[in-house]
Image (tube, rainbow, N blue to C red):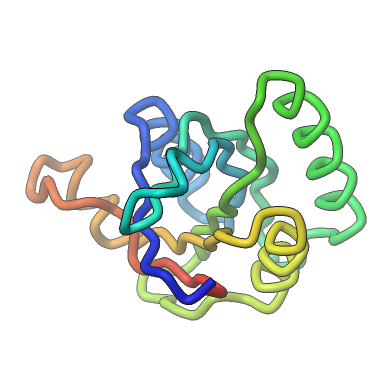
Length: 149
């Protein structure tokens, strides 16, 4: 399990998570990313993320974990029929300069990891997102990826 892992984020998934964060700039937003593990024989292992499912936008950093669990099960059932799995969780903090991953994001990530051992949690960089909208920056808006591998 210690092999290197690479994530390929489809444009549609990237745009959805960015627009979700932009629509609610004063709230913490989060969602799920679905995809599949590509040919397991290649090195590094590649996880193809094909779609994003926005979950919530919560102004008080207190998303309800039971609600997330229910949403996770529904998304797993829906996309499982298409041969896809929940492979990542994304989160954007309410404060622009907040680079800390909240405990609830780690717990949701732990749940995803139990079903998909190459899971990751992505934290969006609100500063870069704002700069991208203003046309000042074209860098990815993902601050960091937290993995269990």
